Length: 258
Image 1 (tube, rainbow, N blue to C red):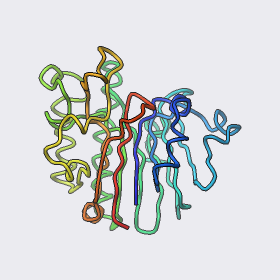
Image 2 (image 1 turned 135 degrees about the vertical axis):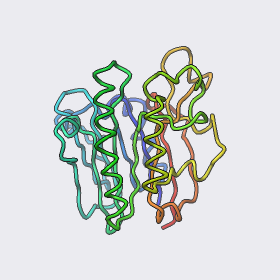
Image 3 (image 1 turned 45 degrees about the horizontal axis):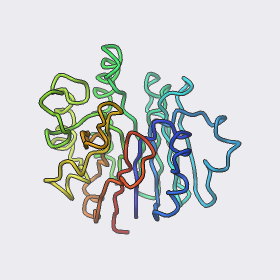
Image 4 (image 1 turned 60 degrees about the vertical axis):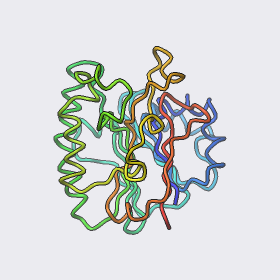
């Protein structure tokens, strides 16, 4: 089973760069998208966004051109969930879950705090709330693959210029500690890090549009698949796809045994 996660920074922009020509060639079973920046009405007249043989669901932000998540699946899910139960986050379209039997695949988009104190405060509220959700998910007996733009680089290995970013959103001490608690206390596994514990630059998934960051590989690893132990046991391979660019993020492709 191949699961891909990608922040598209606008699904229409990614489509114009070849995302939907690339997708059928990759033998993908589930694609989780973050930051769609689109409403269903923006896409429904264009069959490109609803390829034959795929089940497609969007959870869009109320604010047009902002946030939003989507899931593309080769198989019809048994159940679709799209509400966390908190208006602040549900109104921004930050969560979507497909359930296939005992497996849940989640597309999740955490708030970014880089726009200023108000957005950092929203991000911190999300972290406070979602920590309990991660705990509950670990206790409910289901297997999970949580595909997300976490907007957090966990360790010094997860970004190029870690020394100069220690006071910046995305690498703040309390954000990094939050990821550590998810792993150490709740028992989630970072799929790519489990497969490549010493990997550095080749694991980056996001590059600023400033300063020629892509060509210099001055990146951040902020897109992870956090998984339950049962799914970790099925891990086979992971890689960041960089042969084409659909966004300022790159697709993270993870293979699991069937």
